[in-house]
Image (cartoon, rainbow, N blue to C red; front, side, top):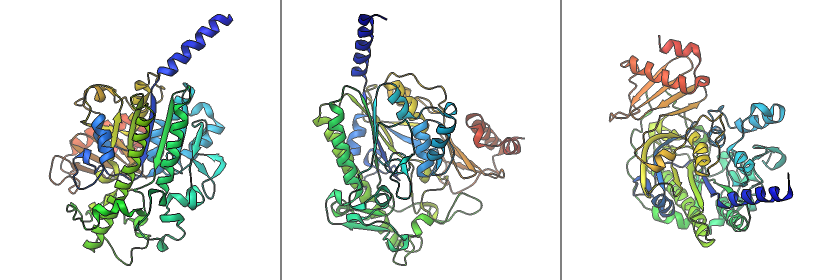
Length: 478
């Protein structure tokens, strides 16, 4: 190859990269779709609402798993993966022993295609993406080959594990029963870990803006994960606020994916039970709301920095909640169930694609769809092994229908369609709920509508055959 031809190829490659969009991916932990842009008027979320006003909010986005590690696995790989919080570490081991069997993660794919990839905070399951006793062992990576940098500023919390469940000014979780389930400290945003994560992200944006490469920057904010601690300024709007009544608070009858809220109940609750104490339940909800408003402020800081650096229009922004969270619905305080409240979360994409800023898409979509969507928006080829499909059709026309969403936890698997949710247990027991009925997920109709159960089971089996055994499938669809 002549020197002149090589120079031309390099110039074309550089020009292509220069025209490629940047990507800012914001991950928020345990975020319910209770935001102003989702039609809720009792949560103050002006910055997320502003982002939605410039992009498209997906009102029926569902995660694959109601737990942090498994949900993030699916988003980052675009595949229906294994359950459990160790899923990414197990993938890392497989990548080391049998690399040909492991497809590229989303950040790895963008990295291979000329992007600088940076992770800050909780993007994979462990903030900073490392293992070890304090989650800071540089030899134990959750996502090898994916990030040019994977950062977690721990500050007074000393290490990522301390920051993950940290309360104000460096308080770390030792024994959970000795840590308050909620708190409001009168101090700056940096009194809690998300303030430091955002500070680091702002520094990285300034550095990345000067690079000759496009960037893929993922910022993982921890709140509103337990414990519900946030600066007092963000609690102020809710201090004496009355919130709407929680619907369907009874423990469900019969076999379901209900659980006893163990993650929540292990914290110090001053001897109170939110399922029996209405005032305590309200106070928990107020502190959760304060955490949402606190995180919203961090989103605002990130958006302002894009504007300040003049790269606002050159950057695709995705805001994604890793799963939902029950605040008393079905008598659950937490996630880890296959009910609507655990599986539905916000998804907002601002891409400049289409002329529908501020619209809402009602299509049922999944977290695995994000990877192929960003590939198409960045005009990159899409890896063949992905299970998701691009959401660009919805970005171009918000009324475009979806294809339903598969979710799973433990040995149970679920399919959500426009109108129904089907849950199949390991032994073949089924739950079927009609979301067009006022009963929604409080009345199991599976015995009354076996034909619909069989139809949805077939849809689920065709979409994710590894999540439903042949034996169980044949039992449901004789």
